[in-house]
Image (cartoon, rainbow, N blue to C red; front, side, top):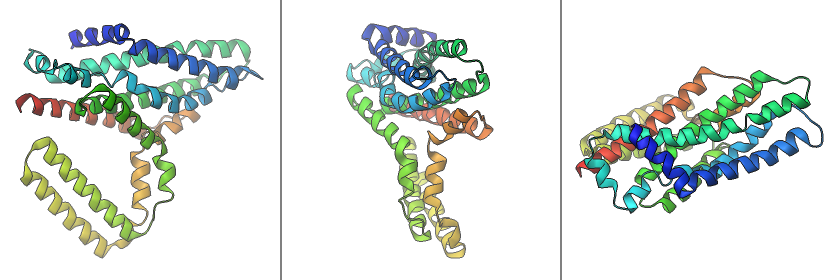
Length: 289
C-alpha cells in the first residue's frame, strides 16, 4: 500500500493535477475569506466560508480522483496492478489515501485563516471552527471515495472527471429538487420498485449471479406490494425522505452550526466503506474476467 501511496503522491505533483487543485481551492478560499471575514468588517464566522466552499470543492475534486484508475486503464497499465503481488484492496486504499492526504494538506493550509481571524477579533468561536473543519473533511472524504469508484468504472480520465462532476452536482441539488416531487403513496411505491430493480441490477453486475439478483427482486417486490396493500400510508413522502437520507451534503450542514452527531459520522464512514468496497469488487472481478 505504501508503494502505491508514494507513487500516487508523486504523480499528483508531476502531472500538475495536485498543484492545480490546491491552487484553485486556496485562491477561491482566500477570496471568500477576505470578503466574508475581513472586508468590510472583521468577524469570526469562518464556518460560513467553509460552508460556501462545499460547492467549490464539488466542482474541483474530480481533479484528484479522475486519473486514479481511469488513467491506468487508458494507458493499458492496469494488468500490472492485477498481476502484482499487491492485494487489490491495498491498491484501492493506497490511491484513496493519497487523494485524502492531498485534500487534507490543502484544507489544513487554510487553518492559517483562523489565526488571522484571532488577531482581528476579540472572541473567536473555536468549537464552531473545529466542527466546521471536521464536517468539511468528512464530506470531502466521502466524495473522494465516490470519485475513486467512478474512476474505476470509467474508460478514461475525462469521462471520469465529467461523471464525478455530474454526480456531485446531483448530490448538491437533489434535496431542493425533491420538494417538487409528488408525495402520494402510489408515487412512493413506484419509487421503491425502481429502487429494488436498481439494487437487483447492481447485485447482478457485481456478482454475475442471476439467481441472487432474481430472488432479491422477487422477495423485495412481494414485500413492497404487501406493505402497500396493508399500510399505504408508509409510502407517502417516501421519495423525499429517501433523498434527504441519501443526500451527502445534507449531513454536513449541522457541522457548520457547531453540532457533531453520531448518525452523520456513521453515514459518512458507510459511504466511504461502500464505495471503496465497490471499487475493490469491480477490480477483483476484472482481474479474473
